[in-house]
Length: 165
Image 1 (cartoon, rainbow, N blue to C red):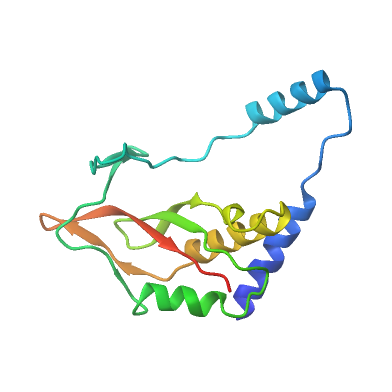
Image 2: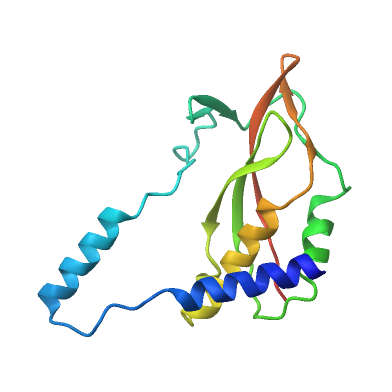
């Protein structure tokens, strides 16, 4: 519970600390935006072409979606765990979709949004808070039993929906 409150406050502080560019002319605004995009590192995108379920190479290691034995969540049902984690967080109603990789060691990594809460809430600040909290919850998930393919431990991509009510 304290961890969830900390994550919520951390996400709120991170959102509020971002600075908006000064009101300038359109040309200056375009220059500022171009410079900010160039400075920012692009997120890791783990997407396949539609209809193709092939492994993806990421960080010089393969991430699978079809395996002999999928990962098993150590705390029981993953959806129940996520519902319990967000039950006391009241920032709005939305269902962001979060994609992540369960590593060979059994821990979640490479957490990314697949669908933002912005789909459900048109306000610009609330969806960012919800997305940040959802990614933080997934990033802090407990251990999984890793996936295996042909008797060997492998990285496995998972997608979960985090429902905020």
